[in-house]
Length: 460
Image: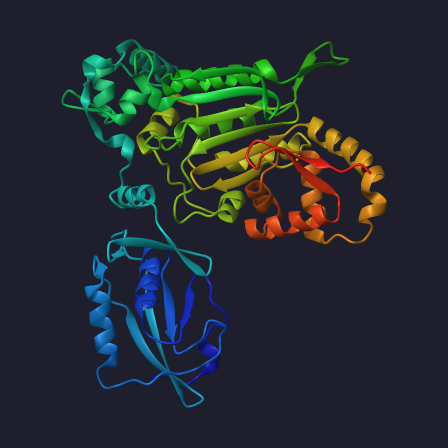
């Protein structure tokens, strides 16, 4: 038994939860901690940190342990400590990150995100289990396909590529190569093998490509369903078709090509789309090219234990969603090593003097938005025009958040509340409240429906 107030955290967080009494929510929090990075539930403290204390009977803590064991699968047993502070009794229930995940309670799975518990989706549960057994969906064998259904010519083409990269020539025939990389077992092929070497096309790999003059006006489009190597090239070809290139003549008589975007960064984002996509999702990958920016959307969220700040700071251990696909792309030389792609993208855009890309977590996937120099020029141009229209009206009456929302609407009149929430870093509800105030002030108005419409600056 300890007796010190200094040992207690002051607020709830990723690692700490406060409860005034033992109840079902305590079990849920312990499950969430088990599925994430571990944590402590303090019982006898209100959610605002006020010490209330609890009454303990002779068998109370033993009864709690039994209830936690009976309500979790696999069973978890927290470490229990009784703490006395200012003559008030508290209890801490500590749990480590469980080695066999995911842990559930009453058939439901949770993870810890910030200071709250979130219910895991079916896909997140499956992916967490696959990571624990050091596997992934693409290792699984297909019952409806065999070696006879894939293109051995494509396999040989990959072998030739690998041979050119290695000092010692690999003389494997296609079937030996496939077995070496666990792409086939007996005569059955893995999901990865089909994605990489399908002879024609399959809707499972569908990518929708579009070049837009506005979010509702499309100039060019293409739908592809190719194998993953071909798809990478086809996506890049479509991008190069619709972005601009300048030829800079230098004194050394060598012309330098300068594209709207750093091509190595765009290729890295395309590879991420192809390699890390959730191919079990019913959603397609989507690429949208505008005159000022490009949007890359991919089905499949970040892994449970990697959040956006860790991704952008490169402070994480790479966990490829499709480990076998990633390994083959690495063997081909198209990727260098796991987990360094985002860092290279950020560095390339910084070296190009462009805005840093935006990374947006969506309900069913992940979006990256990259911006050309035209974006900044357009924002300055529109900003000056809007300043003349609404400058007197706005004055000092807008909050920091409202100013930021207005500037983003100026830059992209089709921007969504979800995208604004990710950029401004406040909740969608707060975004909607601030937009309502901008409407009341007579600064903006909505033209068209919530889904297909756009924002307009009011000119009075």
